[in-house]
Image (cartoon, rainbow over all chains, first blue to last red; front, side):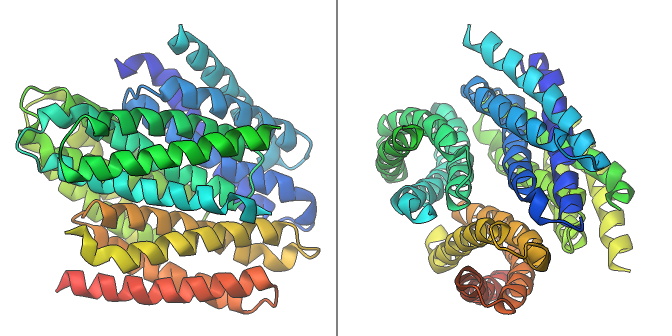
Length: 112
Length: 112
Length: 112
Length: 112
């Protein structure tokens, strides 16, 4: 059953990895202060994506509900990352926005 | 700022511990099959409660949104546990229902 | 820097997904009791793999130490899964054993 | 069975909350750059403490092994936090060091 979630699970795993890498890279920037919101959202987004992947892989009753929140967090993290020129932020923004789309579709399909 | 979340964080930690204990005890029951949904919900609820506690302790922008989903999962887990006579299930039901109340209040306050 | 961890991160994500799927499928087996240890190890292994992936992606000081424990858990979960004929167990055993190798290499390289 | 772990579970939950609060407060400091290692260790420590609490509450076969790594991370996080004057860092250092002791005792008892 969980095969239907395959592309969303893959997007969540990829997004979580990108958020974790962006987090670490942000902490090594010269101007860390400028990256503070990015760092905070990277953690929110990375942790939530990993949990959403887990719920989907288990075929949880609450996978769709969790994906709906995950989509919101991915959008916010993607928008914040997109403001910064660093490659790790741009990569993370791309991963977040793709994951937001997948989670959004997953959230609405499953609720139907 | 996160002090306002203190009682909800405590409820989430206590609920997660109760869910993890109930999970392990269910797996040692004679009739494990009867406990299958309880086992699945214990994991969903325990993991989500730990993440919600983390979001609240960090004062995350998405703490309220996550608590709203957490409240739903706590209610479902509490209802399932309440059906079973075993003490670990009854204890877990109590912890889940208290946590659902706290998360529900937290979710609506913060959204205001 | 975290690029050196790429194959181990991928193995951890794949193993976590396999453990979560195996967990859910075990709970739907006719003889759930026979799968009890498999269910418990699936959760240990899945959660630890997701955390190890996260530590590696962040280039954490403790990524190697965590991968050493992760390798042990993967081996135990792989051995348990290998005992059962169900396809989800065989798939999980394969994913666990591959992940154990990757985590083992990662744990020893990084400690050097 | 998991009752024997009660004080270590409580220490892990308290330490995770302290790490998450310290993480958020560090990100709001004027000199965020000075707090970079503290921020990174807060995440490692907070996440690992939550997983260790979960393993103990489930009476996992690998609870002791995970607590041994958790003790190392708690010590490192406690030492880093202790260098900074801010109250959130001092509070976090205290929680980390108490948790390190509990995890160390737990790790060695269980291995016996």
